[in-house]
Image (cartoon, rainbow, N blue to C red; front, top):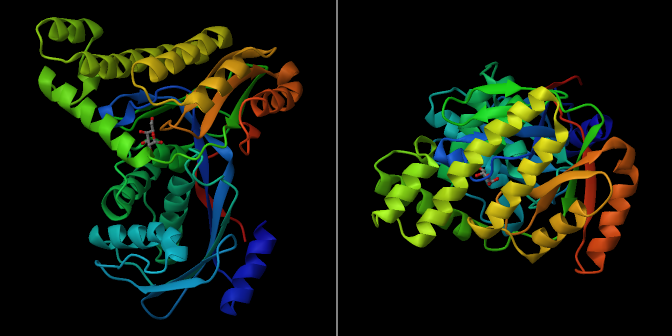
Length: 384
Ligand code: GLA
């Protein structure tokens, strides 16, 4: 793909690229809707990524083109970059947002030509936008001769998404893409941004199944859940639900401080933080069956208490769970569509994908897809 992208760069701009970077998508094994509550997640970067080639220009213009999109977008570096006016170039808002956020941080950028390609499926909850942000920030920094740590790059990518694109996401996606560890999922502490990797148990594969349901109203429903968590924390007198126990929640509910719905939302978050730390202990102990059980419990809470699943996700997870070799399955990412993630014993993995696809098609006429992936390395330079 590098060769093809290099040729595309040359054909688009009439000169060769000088710098290459890559940034992967991610899948979260457990710890969902915990990141913006300052809690814990257990993600890994995946073997699907965005690649960007770049070359410095003598002026202050950024030109950007993608092998998967039509046309070249051009904008000037400034702390007030306009969003794309052409709807077909809306994807370039991620690029514009990253440039604007870096400049707002006082980082000196140079004009450059950018060409990119990617194989992270779009809009299916595997963080194609975070991969794009992290790759673009790496590229903009590299052509300007700067380096920043992975966690700072992740924070800047999240800021571009929050402040420029307007999605109120947490740090999970960008930090996974920027700091993934080859061969190892990582416990992510979203308060300190500390990452502690541990290998997958021997003989266990991670299988992602895309329901084909695109996350329609995800932004409004996501923001609503986020507000409910923030309101719950405020009612409990803490800044984040990270600092609450289940007993504290139940006492507050009894005293009338939390509504029944607020209690359900908070219970998921508090229990999920506990499950995620327990899941990491299972990883360290090589106990895949126990890890799988925690994933099952996570899905049940996301369905019944946090209410972010949908019939497609619930069906996919139930079908996966019934297949030979499956140790645990759950929705991954924001929910309302997108993907499920399952732990599957390696000897069953070849049969698992086709069986799951066939079973799912009996229920839904949607473009289902299955990806088997190992934990990939986080973003970095590409040799060109
Ligand atoms: C989306 C967001 C993340 C995180 C997950 C839910 O992927 O971008 O920040 O909140 O949903 O865990």
